Image 1 (cartoon, rainbow, N blue to C red):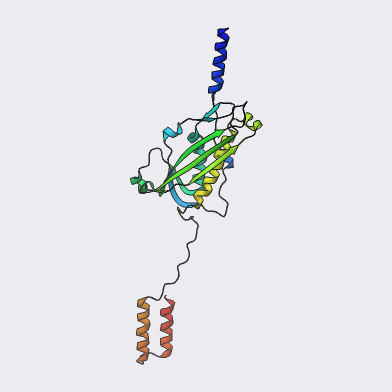
Image 2 (image 1 turned 90 degrees about the vertical axis):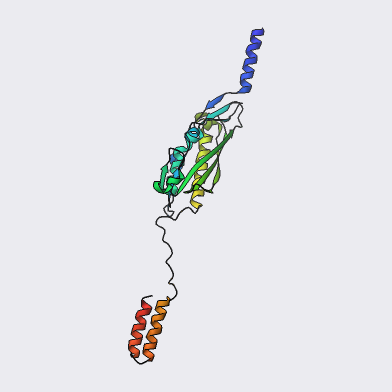
Length: 246
Protein backbone atom coordinates (compact mmCIF):
# COMPACT_ATOMS: atom_id res chain seq x y z
CA UNK A 1 0.00 0.00 0.00
CA UNK A 2 2.80 2.36 0.89
CA UNK A 3 4.46 1.49 -2.41
CA UNK A 4 1.42 2.62 -4.40
CA UNK A 5 1.20 5.80 -2.37
CA UNK A 6 4.83 6.48 -3.21
CA UNK A 7 4.16 5.97 -6.92
CA UNK A 8 1.17 8.29 -6.73
CA UNK A 9 3.24 10.95 -4.96
CA UNK A 10 5.94 10.71 -7.63
CA UNK A 11 3.34 11.01 -10.40
CA UNK A 12 1.75 14.05 -8.76
CA UNK A 13 5.14 15.69 -8.26
CA UNK A 14 6.01 15.06 -11.89
CA UNK A 15 2.72 16.54 -13.05
CA UNK A 16 3.23 19.62 -10.91
CA UNK A 17 6.80 20.20 -12.00
CA UNK A 18 5.93 19.63 -15.68
CA UNK A 19 8.14 18.64 -18.58
CA UNK A 20 10.09 20.80 -20.98
CA UNK A 21 9.35 19.84 -24.58
CA UNK A 22 11.74 20.94 -27.31
CA UNK A 23 10.22 22.90 -30.19
CA UNK A 24 11.49 24.86 -33.19
CA UNK A 25 10.41 28.46 -33.69
CA UNK A 26 12.35 29.29 -36.86
CA UNK A 27 10.35 31.72 -39.04
CA UNK A 28 9.04 30.75 -42.47
CA UNK A 29 11.45 32.40 -44.92
CA UNK A 30 8.84 32.48 -47.69
CA UNK A 31 6.79 34.84 -45.54
CA UNK A 32 9.58 37.42 -45.20
CA UNK A 33 8.57 39.84 -47.93
CA UNK A 34 11.03 41.47 -50.28
CA UNK A 35 10.79 45.23 -50.71
CA UNK A 36 8.12 46.59 -53.05
CA UNK A 37 9.40 47.64 -56.47
CA UNK A 38 8.99 51.32 -55.60
CA UNK A 39 11.15 51.05 -52.44
CA UNK A 40 14.94 51.03 -52.73
CA UNK A 41 17.44 49.48 -50.37
CA UNK A 42 19.40 51.79 -48.13
CA UNK A 43 22.84 52.47 -49.57
CA UNK A 44 24.62 51.26 -46.47
CA UNK A 45 27.18 48.58 -45.66
CA UNK A 46 26.33 46.93 -42.35
CA UNK A 47 27.93 44.14 -40.33
CA UNK A 48 25.79 41.98 -38.06
CA UNK A 49 27.01 39.99 -35.10
CA UNK A 50 25.34 37.31 -32.98
CA UNK A 51 27.70 35.89 -30.32
CA UNK A 52 28.18 32.12 -30.43
CA UNK A 53 27.04 31.81 -26.82
CA UNK A 54 23.69 33.30 -27.81
CA UNK A 55 23.34 30.99 -30.82
CA UNK A 56 23.73 28.05 -28.44
CA UNK A 57 21.45 29.54 -25.78
CA UNK A 58 18.42 27.35 -25.04
CA UNK A 59 15.44 29.10 -23.47
CA UNK A 60 12.59 27.53 -21.50
CA UNK A 61 9.15 29.18 -21.31
CA UNK A 62 5.66 27.97 -20.33
CA UNK A 63 3.50 25.77 -22.53
CA UNK A 64 0.15 24.22 -21.73
CA UNK A 65 -0.97 21.66 -19.18
CA UNK A 66 1.66 22.77 -16.69
CA UNK A 67 4.48 21.83 -19.08
CA UNK A 68 7.22 24.00 -20.55
CA UNK A 69 8.78 24.34 -23.99
CA UNK A 70 12.43 24.85 -24.83
CA UNK A 71 14.05 26.22 -27.97
CA UNK A 72 16.99 28.22 -29.35
CA UNK A 73 15.67 31.70 -30.20
CA UNK A 74 18.86 33.17 -31.69
CA UNK A 75 19.72 30.09 -33.72
CA UNK A 76 16.16 29.83 -35.02
CA UNK A 77 15.88 33.48 -36.03
CA UNK A 78 19.34 33.94 -37.58
CA UNK A 79 18.56 33.02 -41.21
CA UNK A 80 15.37 35.07 -41.27
CA UNK A 81 17.13 37.98 -39.56
CA UNK A 82 19.87 37.93 -42.16
CA UNK A 83 17.28 37.95 -44.95
CA UNK A 84 15.67 41.07 -43.48
CA UNK A 85 19.03 42.84 -43.41
CA UNK A 86 19.67 41.88 -47.05
CA UNK A 87 16.24 43.23 -47.94
CA UNK A 88 16.94 46.60 -46.32
CA UNK A 89 20.65 47.31 -46.85
CA UNK A 90 22.77 47.25 -50.00
CA UNK A 91 25.64 45.33 -48.39
CA UNK A 92 25.50 42.94 -45.41
CA UNK A 93 28.47 41.21 -43.77
CA UNK A 94 28.24 38.48 -41.14
CA UNK A 95 30.85 39.03 -38.42
CA UNK A 96 32.20 35.87 -36.83
CA UNK A 97 33.77 37.64 -33.87
CA UNK A 98 33.06 40.69 -31.72
CA UNK A 99 33.21 43.82 -33.88
CA UNK A 100 36.51 45.68 -33.97
CA UNK A 101 35.28 49.20 -34.63
CA UNK A 102 38.78 50.45 -35.38
CA UNK A 103 38.71 48.28 -38.55
CA UNK A 104 35.37 49.60 -39.80
CA UNK A 105 36.88 51.53 -42.71
CA UNK A 106 39.19 48.63 -43.59
CA UNK A 107 36.19 46.29 -43.69
CA UNK A 108 34.17 48.84 -45.66
CA UNK A 109 31.43 48.96 -43.02
CA UNK A 110 29.31 51.98 -42.20
CA UNK A 111 27.39 50.47 -39.28
CA UNK A 112 27.22 47.46 -36.99
CA UNK A 113 24.05 45.78 -35.76
CA UNK A 114 23.37 43.19 -33.06
CA UNK A 115 19.98 41.73 -32.09
CA UNK A 116 18.66 41.04 -28.61
CA UNK A 117 15.71 38.69 -28.19
CA UNK A 118 13.35 38.19 -25.24
CA UNK A 119 10.63 35.56 -25.67
CA UNK A 120 7.60 34.52 -23.71
CA UNK A 121 4.86 31.95 -24.24
CA UNK A 122 1.78 30.46 -22.65
CA UNK A 123 -1.31 28.45 -23.35
CA UNK A 124 -5.04 28.51 -22.78
CA UNK A 125 -5.04 24.71 -23.03
CA UNK A 126 -4.77 22.52 -19.96
CA UNK A 127 -4.49 19.04 -21.43
CA UNK A 128 -1.91 19.65 -24.18
CA UNK A 129 1.51 21.19 -23.86
CA UNK A 130 2.18 23.14 -27.14
CA UNK A 131 1.76 26.90 -26.49
CA UNK A 132 -1.23 28.75 -27.93
CA UNK A 133 0.43 32.17 -27.71
CA UNK A 134 3.97 33.41 -28.14
CA UNK A 135 5.78 36.76 -28.18
CA UNK A 136 9.16 37.78 -29.55
CA UNK A 137 10.57 41.07 -28.23
CA UNK A 138 13.32 42.01 -30.71
CA UNK A 139 15.68 44.95 -30.14
CA UNK A 140 18.63 45.95 -32.33
CA UNK A 141 21.67 47.88 -31.17
CA UNK A 142 23.02 49.85 -34.13
CA UNK A 143 26.48 51.38 -33.80
CA UNK A 144 28.43 53.66 -36.09
CA UNK A 145 32.04 53.12 -37.14
CA UNK A 146 33.27 54.55 -33.83
CA UNK A 147 31.25 52.01 -31.83
CA UNK A 148 28.75 54.58 -30.58
CA UNK A 149 25.15 53.38 -30.29
CA UNK A 150 23.08 55.58 -32.61
CA UNK A 151 19.76 53.71 -32.56
CA UNK A 152 18.00 50.87 -30.72
CA UNK A 153 14.88 50.03 -32.75
CA UNK A 154 12.53 47.64 -30.97
CA UNK A 155 9.48 45.63 -32.06
CA UNK A 156 7.30 42.95 -30.50
CA UNK A 157 6.06 40.06 -32.62
CA UNK A 158 2.98 38.08 -31.61
CA UNK A 159 1.87 34.62 -32.69
CA UNK A 160 -1.13 32.46 -31.80
CA UNK A 161 -2.29 28.96 -32.70
CA UNK A 162 -5.51 26.97 -32.53
CA UNK A 163 -5.61 23.52 -30.94
CA UNK A 164 -5.52 21.56 -34.20
CA UNK A 165 -2.62 23.65 -35.53
CA UNK A 166 -0.39 23.34 -32.50
CA UNK A 167 -0.95 19.61 -32.25
CA UNK A 168 0.27 19.10 -35.81
CA UNK A 169 3.11 21.63 -35.49
CA UNK A 170 4.13 22.22 -31.91
CA UNK A 171 6.05 25.46 -32.47
CA UNK A 172 3.57 27.16 -34.83
CA UNK A 173 2.75 30.02 -32.43
CA UNK A 174 6.46 30.72 -31.97
CA UNK A 175 7.12 30.67 -35.71
CA UNK A 176 4.32 33.13 -36.31
CA UNK A 177 5.69 35.43 -33.61
CA UNK A 178 9.13 35.27 -35.22
CA UNK A 179 7.70 36.17 -38.64
CA UNK A 180 5.68 39.01 -37.13
CA UNK A 181 8.74 40.42 -35.33
CA UNK A 182 10.91 40.25 -38.47
CA UNK A 183 8.25 41.89 -40.64
CA UNK A 184 7.88 44.75 -38.15
CA UNK A 185 11.66 45.12 -37.81
CA UNK A 186 12.11 45.32 -41.58
CA UNK A 187 9.61 48.17 -41.76
CA UNK A 188 11.27 49.89 -38.79
CA UNK A 189 14.78 49.67 -40.28
CA UNK A 190 13.55 51.18 -43.53
CA UNK A 191 12.35 54.22 -41.60
CA UNK A 192 15.78 54.87 -40.09
CA UNK A 193 17.88 57.53 -41.80
CA UNK A 194 20.98 55.35 -42.17
CA UNK A 195 21.61 55.96 -45.84
CA UNK A 196 20.19 57.14 -49.13
CA UNK A 197 18.72 54.60 -51.56
CA UNK A 198 21.42 53.92 -54.22
CA UNK A 199 19.24 55.03 -57.13
CA UNK A 200 17.77 57.97 -55.31
CA UNK A 201 18.37 61.18 -57.22
CA UNK A 202 19.75 64.00 -55.14
CA UNK A 203 17.96 67.32 -55.61
CA UNK A 204 19.53 69.50 -58.24
CA UNK A 205 21.59 72.25 -56.78
CA UNK A 206 20.13 75.68 -57.14
CA UNK A 207 22.16 78.12 -59.09
CA UNK A 208 24.26 80.06 -56.69
CA UNK A 209 24.05 83.82 -56.58
CA UNK A 210 26.28 85.66 -59.02
CA UNK A 211 29.91 85.17 -58.06
CA UNK A 212 32.09 88.18 -57.28
CA UNK A 213 34.31 87.46 -60.32
CA UNK A 214 31.32 87.55 -62.70
CA UNK A 215 30.06 90.77 -61.12
CA UNK A 216 33.52 92.26 -61.49
CA UNK A 217 33.70 91.28 -65.16
CA UNK A 218 30.31 92.85 -65.84
CA UNK A 219 31.40 96.00 -64.04
CA UNK A 220 34.57 96.24 -66.07
CA UNK A 221 32.64 95.58 -69.27
CA UNK A 222 30.22 98.44 -68.53
CA UNK A 223 33.09 100.75 -67.71
CA UNK A 224 34.71 99.95 -71.07
CA UNK A 225 31.41 100.64 -72.85
CA UNK A 226 30.91 103.92 -70.98
CA UNK A 227 34.33 105.05 -72.15
CA UNK A 228 33.29 104.39 -75.73
CA UNK A 229 35.88 101.66 -76.26
CA UNK A 230 33.25 99.14 -77.46
CA UNK A 231 29.92 99.52 -79.21
CA UNK A 232 26.56 98.78 -77.59
CA UNK A 233 26.24 95.64 -79.71
CA UNK A 234 29.65 94.40 -78.56
CA UNK A 235 28.71 95.20 -74.94
CA UNK A 236 25.46 93.23 -75.14
CA UNK A 237 27.24 90.27 -76.77
CA UNK A 238 29.95 90.11 -74.09
CA UNK A 239 27.43 90.67 -71.30
CA UNK A 240 25.35 87.72 -72.53
CA UNK A 241 28.45 85.49 -72.63
CA UNK A 242 29.25 86.27 -68.98
CA UNK A 243 25.69 85.63 -67.83
CA UNK A 244 25.47 82.36 -69.75
CA UNK A 245 28.63 81.11 -68.05
CA UNK A 246 27.02 81.24 -64.60
